[in-house]
Length: 243
Image (cartoon, rainbow, N blue to C red; front, side, top):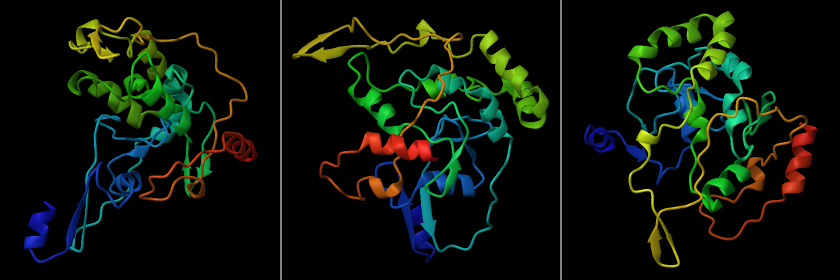
């Protein structure tokens, strides 16, 4: 598409997940494609939930400008906290939003999340937060009424959140398990014996005074850096307490 725009005589550049010079989340919000969620640095679309990827094209082509949307997600996320309850490493905030790098948001524990997904010996990656989200459903048609209620009837949102748990949304389905669930250790391929197999934790207590470290933009590695950049976790927690 960027190439086609250039053929029309306008400069254009494509920005993908692997090669980008812009931040996708702010542009996704400004384009009216969703709202920022409790999950943290994740934008939710009212019809797709968190289940989408973005690509951006910057160009000088004159176009009509969209506006940000409000489908009630801030109120819904404030009441829900299901993703925070089910996060295995406690990287999602139970508390309110904070001002972080110029945005009002539920700040995530990016360090804990990354460490869990990358270094966990019981299975890399995770995605529990997206699996848990009440806006993440397998099909639109059978959930269209609930979606309509969630967006348009704020007093019923707590009921929908309770109903989401009562109906067991977020449980594992063995039929959807990846058929080639193997691991390689010491050069040998085998079935993993100790992988994470989590189900809903409905009675998990909400932690009190939980502090998620805050890493503002000036504390993270600069763009293009390949050098080790240790993070000061204690300083980040002290910063969070002040916020």
